[in-house]
Amino acid sequence: MKLQEIYDVLNKISPFELQEKWDNSGLIVGEMDREVTDIVLSLDIDADMTEEAVEGTLFVVHHPLIFSELTSLDFAKYPSNLLEKMILKKQSCIALHTNFDKTHLNRYVFEKVLGLETVKQEAFVCMAKGAWKYKELLQLLKEKLGLSTLKVIGKKEVVNSIALTTGSGASLIDEVEADCFLTGDIKYHDAMKALSEDLMMVDIGHYESECFFAEILAEELKILGILAIIMKSKNPFMMETVPQ
Image 1 (cartoon, rainbow, N blue to C red):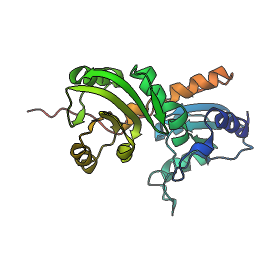
Image 2: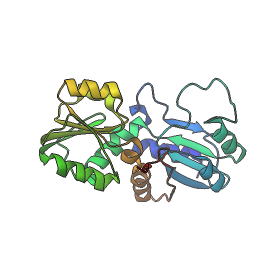
Image 3: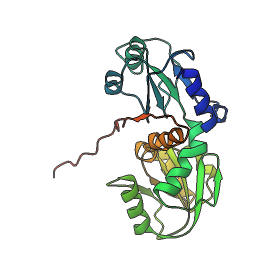
Image 4: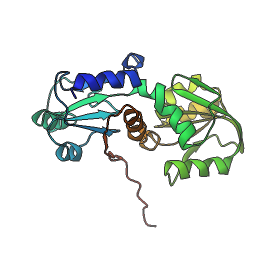
């Protein structure tokens, strides 16, 4: 298949026009008339993937490899080091980021992974209502997301409504109308704001909450008769226990 054909399929699955203005979803590397030999799905691209993938591979990723403005191509630094390898091997890249968050990822994690029932979804935020005890909720999050520890702000013994945004969603605090907000990358001042507004927050990790991207998209493509390879990108964070 040509890259244009695959791009058109992806655009039907999750329209690129839904992406946020600050986002860079769409074609990142390549040309639309190029023939694609293999399709690789992953949250991110890393050096091992570019080495392992054959010439002509199309990477379909969640996080855009080029996100902020590139003012130079220093091949010793990220992401230029990966771009050089990809160009030499005629590899391509398409990103589905905030558009896929809205159409698939948030709801999938909320319902299929955590087993919660969405009563309302507005853009990036899914919400459920019910009654969850504090310890039971945390145990659920640990088990389903593979987390050994959790950062919690504003502990509530009973939670009657839960909101979720995968990845880094703390900037959406003002849009959340729930007892508890689940998201990743919670900063210190986000935590202070939540605490002052009686909002419980749980940091569920950026990687851990979005690592389902490839399996979701693989299933969508399979339905359309397109086979893709799933490659698991590395979590840049390592959890280490320091001996006493």
